[in-house]
Length: 113
Length: 109
Image (cartoon, rainbow over all chains, first blue to last red; front, side, top):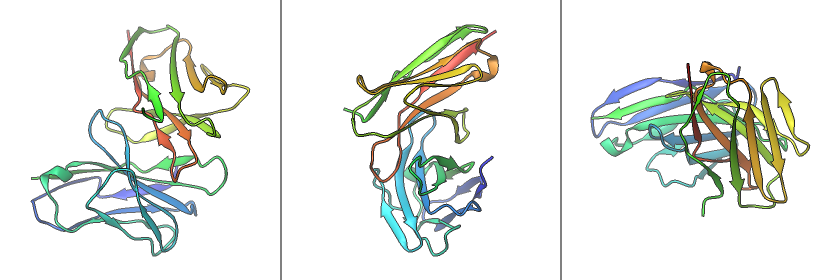
C-alpha cells in the first residue's frame, strides 16, 4: 500500500470560499502531482512538482494554485471556489527513477454549492 | 489524436471468461508502460508494469508490441471482483505519465 494521504476526503462548501486540499506522502518521493477527475471521466493533470520549491501547471488549466515547501507536502488551494470546481481531486507521487510509477492518494471529493 | 487511446467499453463478460484489452500509444520514444485499475469512485492503483518481453501476474498477462505501438492486458478466469476500469498508462517523456481514458469491465455472475 502507498503511504500517501489526502484530507479532507469529502468537502461541501459554498461559492466564494477559500479552500486548501491537503496531500502528504511519507515515501520520500520527489515528484508529486494533482489530477482532477469527474465521475466516469479521464484523469486530467492540473499541477506537478519535481521537488521542493518546484511547481508547474499541468495539461488542464486550473484556477487552483499549489506550493511545495516540504518534500512530503503538496497542498492545493482554491482562492474562491465556484460550482465549476466540483470534482474529485487526486494527489499522486512518484520516485525519480526511470520507472516513474505513480502512487495515488484516496482523493478529495469537492462539491461547491 | 490522443497520446494514449483505449476502447472505453463496457466489456460485459461472464465469470470465468477470458477478456483482453488493447491500448495504442502515439509516441514511439515511450519507455515505460503500466496498467492501472480504478474502482468506481476510488483512486487508480497500479495493477502491473508492462515489460518488453511480456509479463504475467497470476491471471493477468501484459504484452507490449513496440513495432505496432500497442499494449495489451489479458485477464483469464474473470472474477466478479475484476469489475473495474482498467487504465493504460504510458511514460511519453513528458512531465508526468499519460493516462488513457480507461476501459470498463463488468464481470457478471
